[in-house]
Length: 326
Image 1 (spheres, rainbow, N blue to C red):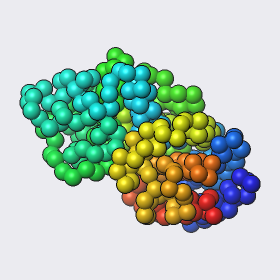
Image 2 (cartoon, rainbow, N blue to C red):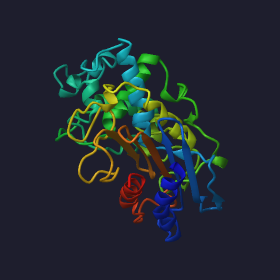
Image 3 (cartoon, rainbow, N blue to C red):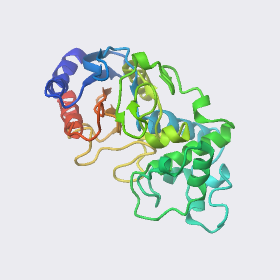
Image 4 (spheres, rainbow, N blue to C red):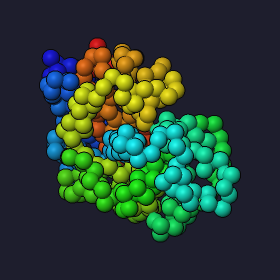
C-alpha cells in the first residue's frame, strides 16, 4: 500500500529532476503503525564534483528546524513548568530591548512567536551587520524593530532560540539535536546547497541560511537529518494526544509552530483538515495527516547550485501531496 502510493507520488519528483529543475530528491512515506517506503532519485551534488543521492544522505533541513527542534523544546519546557507560553520572552531574556522598558518587543510572548503572531518583519539580513556571533545576538536583542502586520518571521524563532540558549546556558549547537539529527554532519555524505557568493564556496555540511551561519546556531535553521530521521520523528507525532498544541490552531493557517491546512497551502488540496506541515527554504518539507494516519517528507536540494532559478518547488510539493492523498 505505502509502496504503491509512494511510486505514484514520486513521478513528478523524477520529472523535475529530468527537466533539470532540481538536482535530486528523496520522498518518504510512513504510517502511524510504522509501515514505510522511501524513493531516491538524482544527485546530492552537481559541482564542483558530482555525487549521487542515497537513502543515507543528510539534508540541510532549513526551517524544519523550527518545528523539529525549536518548537519541540519550547513546548516541552513549558509543559514542565519552566515558563508559561503566555509569558513574555523577557522571563528568559530580561535584557531584550533593555534600554526601553516600554518597548513593544518586551511584551512579545512565547506563544505569539510560535504562531508567528508578532509585529517582527519576516526576515532581516543580520549577517550583514558584523561577523561576531555574540555581537549579532546583542544586535537582535537591542534593535528597535520596525513593526508590521503579523507575518511568518525568522525573527520569532531566532528569539526563541536565544531563549533556549539562556535556559540551558549554552549555544544551541552544543545541545543534543535528537536521534538521527546533527548541526554539523559529514560533508561527504551531505547534499550540497548553494554556491554562495557571500562565503565564496559551494555549501555542503554547513548551514545554508546566512543568519544562522553568522550566529553560529539559531532557532530558525541549522538542523540536518536523513529521510529516515525525519520519518522517525514524524511517526512519533502520532503518539501525541489529539489536543497537543502542535495540532491546536492559533490562526486559520497556523498551530503552535506548524502550518495548518488552508486554501492553496503546500500540503495539497486533498489533505485532511486534521493535519500539520512545514517546509524549508533549501527544498525540504514534512506533512502529517492524522485522519489518514500517514506522514510524508520530500527532501530536495533545490537551491544547488543557486536559489536564483525556477525550481518549481511550490507546485511540486502540492502535486506530491495530492498524489499521496489520492
